[in-house]
Every structure is written in C-alpha cells, then in structure tokens.
Image 1 (tube, rainbow, N blue to C red):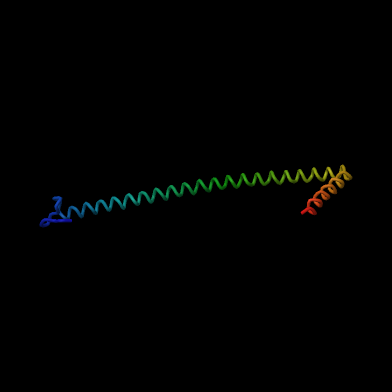
Image 2 (cartoon, one colour):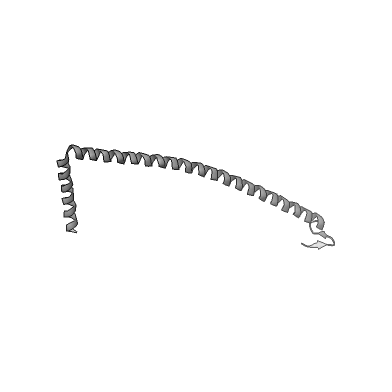
Length: 108
C-alpha cells in the first residue's frame, strides 16, 4: 500500500485500515463458524435419517426373509404330501429327471 506521510493514498489512516481489516477477518471467522455449525447440524440430521431408513430396510428384509422361509416350508410340505400320496409317480418322475440330466451331462 502506498502512503504519503502517515496516510495511505485512499485517504484513510493506517490504523483505520487495520481495524477495518480486523473487523472483516472477525466477520469472516464468525461466518465460517456459523457455516461449520450448519454443516454439523445437517450431518446430524442426515445421520438420523439414514439410521431411521436402515431400520426400516432391516425390518423389511426380515419380513421378506420370514415370508420366503414360510413359502419354502409350504413347498417342502407339498412335495412331501405328493410323494406320500403318489409314491410310484414320484419315483418315476425322479428317475426321468435323472435320466435327462445324465443324457445332457454325457453330451458335454
């Protein structure tokens, strides 16, 4: 900064320029602190929302898992009932499926 005597070219005294710069720096620090606090609050809100969503997803996954287990159990029971009701058909069907798999396996 160029000065003439004790005064800068802009007409302000040196001490006034320093104080104004100090005030600007203080404002900048205060605003940076406000931004930091806002970002921290936003992070806390995002974390809470993510935690809540994870809980919902965990509950949904547990429900799907339980439904799947029930369906597999029902299918298993149906197969067992079919085998008990018609054992000859079941053995012939299993033999036919085994024959087909064997024929495809030999071709390779």
